Structure formats: structure tokens, C-alpha cells
Image (cartoon, rainbow, N blue to C red; front, side, top):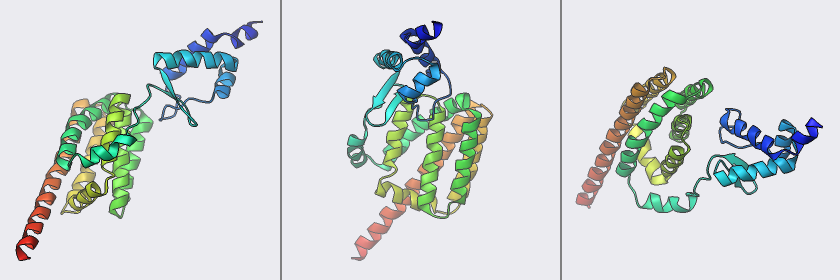
Length: 243
């Protein structure tokens, strides 16, 4: 009898779902198991699960993506439709100004909240960057490392903002400038060392040190970008004079 009551008890299902959302059992993207899997997991009916999910959706605790599933947190805005406009209307200096104000804060939060497996993942990504033998691969893994830090900060709204910034770096013009800047002198070796210092600070749960390490890393990149852009501008000027 007790089993039948629990099977048709939506409040019980809601309580169990709240517990799941508060745990660390979900995948990194926050996707929930299917309704059927949840029903089996909690030993309740699918109708109870469906009703409980409706309550959580109304509260903004979950959101649904058609054809994909149900996710924890509030639904992200679909920035894809606006990214091209954003890319066209900005430049690398504006991007770096925003990164310098956001990513050190994300590093601080990551130092406070990052789990052991997330720190391990950061070290794996840093190694991928070091082992990359071409700029395309380095850019890919570098973006993945910075996103892992942003994700480990545990703030979905911050992560949404970061994803918009990170999308801009995929623009071809932005990628070429970064590639030239990274190939200059000792930029790569300095960047690798800075990544190591940053991850060590996060692993030590030292927010102040992590934030400063991220700030110094971005300042170095900003300085190299400015230098590269100045060289490109000077080169164009020489060609123009010669013509």
C-alpha cells in the first residue's frame, strides 16, 4: 500500500527532484534523466514525475529544450541569433576589456567552488594546449580550459556571459590576430606557465591568487595583441607609402 501511495505522490516526486537538483549527480551540462528514468529511479509514476517537473519549470528551476531534454537552471537566451552582430560591432580591445573584468572573478569563484575532478580536467586541458602543434588546436584547447574555469565557478549567468565572449573568439579575424600574437617570441612558454600558476591557485582554493593569476594572464595577452596590431598597422602603412 505504501508503495502505491509513493508511486502516485507528486509531492514525494517533487521532493526527490529537488534533492537531485541540489546534488552533484547531474552531468556538467545540467541535463536531467528522462521522465521514465526518473520514475524508475524514484519508484514513482511518470505522471507524478511530469507534475513535479511542471512545478519546477514554473519556479524556473528547470527548462526544456525540444528534442534534447530537460535541464537544470533557467533557460539561456539564444545568443546564436545575435552573435554575428556582436562580432561585427566590436574589436579585440573591447573584448579584452570585458574579459579582464569577468574572467578574474570567475577564477576567484572557481577557487572557492571547483571540485577535485574539475581541477583534474583543468590540468588535462592545459596539457593538451602544451602538446598542440598547430594554432588551431591550441585555440581549441585554450578555449576549453577557460570555459572549464568559468563552468567551475558555479554561476550559470556568468557562464552564459562567458559563452558569448568565447563565441567571439571563433571569428576568423579574431583568431588570426590571436595566432600572430601567440607566435611572437616567448608568448607560448609564458602562457603555459601562467596557466599552471592559475590552476595551482584554484587547486589551493586561493581566490585572491587565482583572480590575480587570471588577470596577469589576460594582461599579457592584451599587451601582445596591442603590439601585434601596431605592427600590422605599421606594415600596411609602409606598403601604402611604397605604392
